[in-house]
Amino acid sequence: MSETFDVVIIGAGPGGYNCAIRCGQLGLKTAIIEKRATLGGTCLNVGCIPSKALLHASELFESSIKDFEALGIETGGVKLNLPQMLKQKDDAVKGLTEGVAYLMKKNKVTVFSGTGRIAGAGKVVVEGDDAVELSAKNIVIATGSEPTSLPGIEIDEERIVSSTGALKLQGVPKKMIVIGAGVIGLELGSVWKRLGAEVAVVEYLPRILPGADGEVAKQAQAIFKKQGMDFHLGMKVTSVETLKTKLKLTMEPAAGGEAQILDADVVLVAIGRRPYTEGLGLETVGIETDKRGFVPNDHFKTSANGVWVIGDTTYGPMLAHKAEDDGAACAELIAGKPGHVDYNLVPGVVYTSPEIAWVGKTEETLKEEGRKYKVGKFPFMANSRARTNHTTDGFVKILADAQTDEVLGAHMIGVGVGEMIGEVCVAMEFKAASEDIARTCHAHPTQSEAIRQAAMGVEGWTMQM
Ligand code: FAD
Ligand code: NAI
Image (cartoon, rainbow, N blue to C red; front, side, top):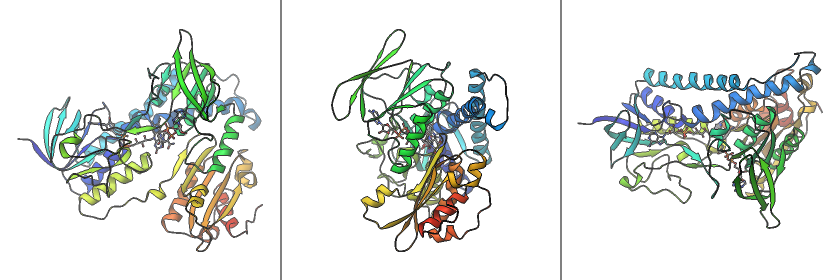
């Protein structure tokens, strides 16, 4: 007879493993199934964690060459040891994935290694190392997403790579072309540019970072261009030809026009990710995906009784912290408690140098919605901590409702803004007015003073400019 669980979760990424931990804490008998050799999903294995390890190391490498001397630090010749840089990335991944395995044990979650498939109401089959059939009062789909590819361009993960291949290149390419000026393209493009590659970015739209505030994206592009990234915006890639010694990329203006050719050693395809539900047996419980492959949900409930969905496989931003919050809220709903995630308050951070961070609505969205809003802005050039650190690029922008003064959004570009955005998330969660932030004492000299000064700017009383 198959073992019965209160909850069987398929996929052990940030959505799945956080859901499992919360289920365990709530006293539900829980199992999680993962087909990858290690737990942690895309984020820990081939996403957030390895990319941040490389971003950090490559930033220090570049700084040691470009910035240290002006600070009075003489290092002598700086040399890249790429195998060691890749190893410290792998060490970070190993430590964290092992940490998830420990958390499963600690919360009494049974881990099955193999591929999970729904085999009808309340039934999940595991194929692989732990082949078994499980009975489940609740099934949670947490199978995540996979990179989207371009028709006719075959990813071999060596010369034509997705983010997964770009995290383990064995040498620094002389020329790299990134297709897609989104988050992955800019982060991983930055890594290899800092390590010595010439990087060109080809983007279909006329701007970079769609979804980010337009003014921030414009400044980001100018800064990245100054750093040496080459942008080809409004261009459609039509083919990538694999020649013996190089790759030949052909592109043409999205609006129509003459084709252009670029050469490269490595092409990174970073044009978005799509939900992954291959072979999951959705049809056995009558679940249909939408046109883009997402599993529709109402408060994480799918159309099938007792089947739930969280994370990248369903709607909302495709981010690890959103998947985590989905997981915890879904567990609480399964346990009969209230559970909710406000996707408007999920922050976005791009870990380039400088970083880009935002939460809430952009000016573009507020305009589209016909909302009346006020703007407060403060440049890091006028922030004393940024001046002491010689990191004065960027600004903070706060958007507030014209009548009520409620903060509707915050958009930042600057060193360390990925850490600073949390303050505005808390303020918005508590429905703060911009005046609440403006009247909150911030330590001096800190970069977070720029947030306070921008909030003061909403009512026109910025004091340090
Ligand atoms: P996943 O993490 O994709 O996990 C799903 C898991 O399910 C996988 O391990 C998969 O093997 C498993 N699985 C699938 N089908 C089955 C099956 N049938 N049986 C068993 N197991 C199955 N987000 C951020 O917030 N911050 C970042 O800095 C960031 N950086 C990123 C960098 C890169 C290069 C990439 C690619 C993504 C990045 N992301 C980042 C996005 C983040 O990784 C995802 O949003 C997040 O991992 C989604 O979590 P999830 O649990 O929904 O799915
Ligand atoms: P993305 O959606 O951020 O960017 C894709 C870019 O490719 C867009 O600018 C889009 O206009 C462009 N594009 C689409 N089709 C194209 C084509 N045919 N030719 C040229 N350009 C094209 O997707 P990305 O960067 O692949 O990242 C996938 C997901 O991973 C995102 O949802 C992101 O949130 C997540 N992620 C998050 C990170 C973070 O939080 N720091 C880091 C990396 C990834």
